[in-house]
Length: 309
Image 1: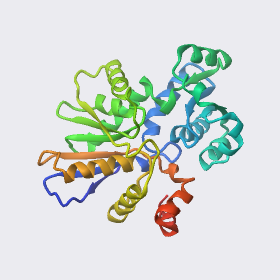
Image 2 (image 1 turned 30 degrees about the horizontal axis):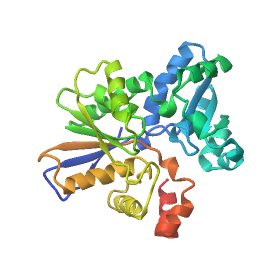
Image 3 (image 1 turned 30 degrees about the vertical axis):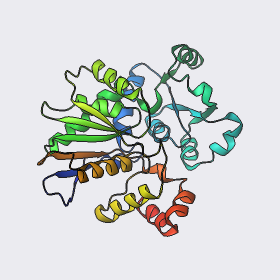
């Protein structure tokens, strides 16, 4: 793991970023940590297929397809999207690459997609595919939590830090990081979507993983809603790239970093605090955003993204 210091005008704080985006080209960022334990369990149980859920530009679906192919599994992605628009959805860069890796795609409408956590729905799905391990949306289960413990443990092997932060979509990565902390540390998650159930879900994941104390918190960083990007966010991303040489993804880590910089500006952190931010990958999420980026900030900025992917 590579950890890069970030220069701040406020010399009283120490800020760094853990470059998980540089690890494992097939399942970059936190996806490797979340999926690897699931794959190991599937092999132990003799499963031949992996099934999971996601949107049309899901980092999880993309990683599951490519990493699953390498590990020798068949994969099925159940994708949120109206079936009548399946042809258009399946031509986006994320799903095209997933299909090239052998993933079968099944498109379901949003009403059915809301059943993805329903016990009866999952039982019926398991009956249809008895050879499969069904992995929750985002890869978020107890296997993923145990895998993500290694993130904080690896950070601590390299440097001592007071706070480890990560962007949250489902909460499993934060749960794992919190479970792997030492007694003096805390983890802070930055939610990039408006999900009132996330706090409770993270608490349950950590409880089931035997964490013994409340060593984590959750803050909002949705900035207009999940996957919503505007000119202000893009300006921040390009300013960050220019100053650090690090490209952030548009959905997760960029929003966490922008929120943290706002907190630093507002002096919300105690002096002498050391903060390590986790770059959780997701750079493939830029693909398909050419029109939006070009419209908001110009073609030259889009070309800069492509150079750094």
